[in-house]
Image 1 (spheres, rainbow, N blue to C red):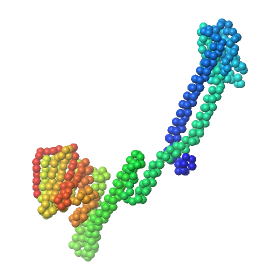
Image 2 (cartoon, one colour):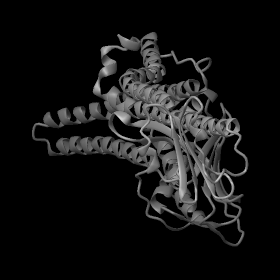
Image 3 (cartoon, rainbow, N blue to C red):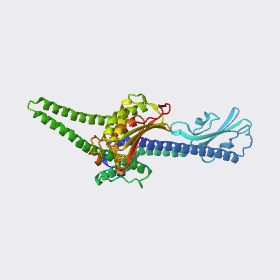
Image 4 (cartoon, rainbow, N blue to C red):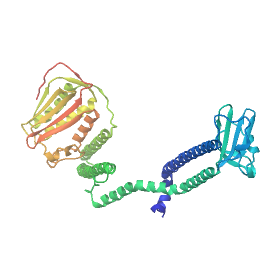
Length: 471
């Protein structure tokens, strides 16, 4: 089709998109045409005025007119140069009018003597003429007025004006396809991107868009698309792993719940056996509910919708409560807990959730510690932050697992032999992030781990320096 356009290019969305381009092209063409016509008119008018002045000068020179005219204004001035329509001379109450052949003198006697102008219309009907008039004073009260035939130049300008109007109308018709073609050209990179995305989708999960050689704008767009694709792939992979872990971790409590129910059905009137099966069922259902609640809390924190009940919390007292809670568990595993407080600090925190953070970290340190080992908890203040570190000499974490331990429901191969949901560290990171802090881990396999929690010191206050330690 015209300009290589297809039927889709003439759809209403394309027409609407091309409308500003059309008005820009057509309006710009009209403005340029008007400026050109104005310049041409001014040039032709200047030519007419100059020619009229030159004809008048030629007439005066040929008639030997000096600084003044004779009082009688003799008849000898009737000869006019070629192209001149009339010459009118006035001195006081006397005036002399000389006109060319076929010119009605009465039409020129009524003109104001000081009238000057280009393309003046004089007369009417068949005697109407287009005349360029100049007026000049010539000493001793003499006024000269002359007129040159301007019909030729006026017709030339009118022909140019008509052609410009015809061109403006034709451009109105031609600029629409041109505007549609410009829109089509602007969409070529988008169409190419769509094709490449389709090829990337069909090429496999590892394919990405080329980020170089497409132009700076397209390269930037492809980089952002690749980031989005990689992010989505990672989310899908995490979702698949989460579903696998959920299926694996829910299978055990649900199987136990089913076994407890079957055991209760076989009680055959034995109240003690029936009560035991119901108790086991409640325990397993509580385990499932706890897993789901933690997953919901992590999801709330990651989406930014977790609500905090902030109050002034003494971090030394908060850590001391957790140590006291786990001291019996640590004694059973023959692990020593040390709490070292460099400088007691209080901060605006959610006491319940921050206590759960300490509990999760301490529980992991004991759970994956070694018999006869130790767990050291330190509280210190750094630059604009509070630093709480949980250090142990347990089994450690491999380098490959150190990034994955924060994923929901992820549990390493060595951790599956111990009870747990695989949600503790995800919950820890989510709560700490909601408080505006961050948590990190450093670990060496078979030598131990150190989890460091950093909370902003902006709303914290320090107290007098002391040190507390306990087992």
